[in-house]
Amino acid sequence: MNGVNKTLYIPLYGKAYVSRKGIILQDRKAEEIWQAEGFPLKGKAKSRWLAYYMAMRARVFDRWTEQQLQYNPDVVVLHIGCGMDSRVLRVKEQAAAWFDVDFAEVIEERKRYFPEGNGYAMLAGDARQTNWLEALPDGKDAVVVLEGISMYLTQEERRQLMQALCRKFRSVQVMEDFYTGLAVKMSRMKNPVHAVGVGQVHGMDDPNEEIRGTGMGYFKQHDMTPDVLVNELQGLERMLFRKLYAGKLSDRLYRIYEFQKGRD
Image 1: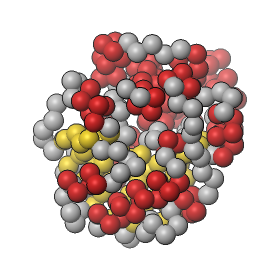
Image 2 (image 1 turned 90 degrees about the vertical axis):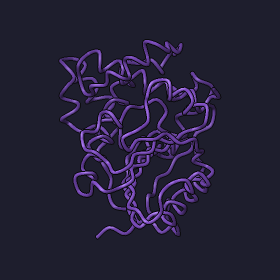
Image 3 (image 1 turned 180 degrees about the vertical axis):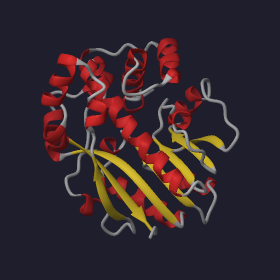
Image 4 (image 1 turned 30 degrees about the vertical axis):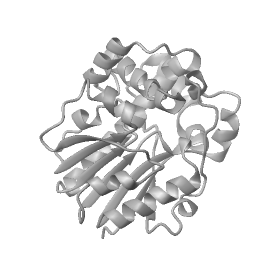
């Protein structure tokens, strides 16, 4: 796998780590895959603090996806840049159709662990190229998860993806996480993705500018490190995480935004 593809092992490790500890996120599939693959992470990529961060981010995305499906179960769920994530197993609500999308070599690897069927399928596709959307059903409402991929796309690539989603679906709900401009500057010195060979990342500060001219509208920002999840840590770890990684400091570096098209 190339460097961007290898970044999938960083959140996979984080989910397996917290799942073994019995906090934040229960993900037996992540434990299974990590034990089988054993990708050699090092340095900050294997930090327990990053593991907690990745797990909290996943829980926030999980809960949002569940809420969207409670509102309208007759939707197409697209998890673009799915890596080896098992959200389709963690989310309790059933979707009419769920597609996990990633590079062909990632999907090939993923099929070793996830069976298709019962409304679930995997699709080879590059977020920078939108022709793979033609394989999906037209005239549907879509819930789109873009977790951990925006930093590898330029602003123009992200806009083109938003435009394509708006053209394809009747209504679209998108949740996406971003580095801020400050985080991009800081990442030139220290960033866990360097451990897997990624040298350049991208950021964004203004969500309205991000989707200008795409047909999508900015809806709201979500808390990356909600207290209910931070409180699952214990003792000194909880105090240090809250002081060093959560709240205002987190918001200066990393944000989760929700966008939508066509929902009243």
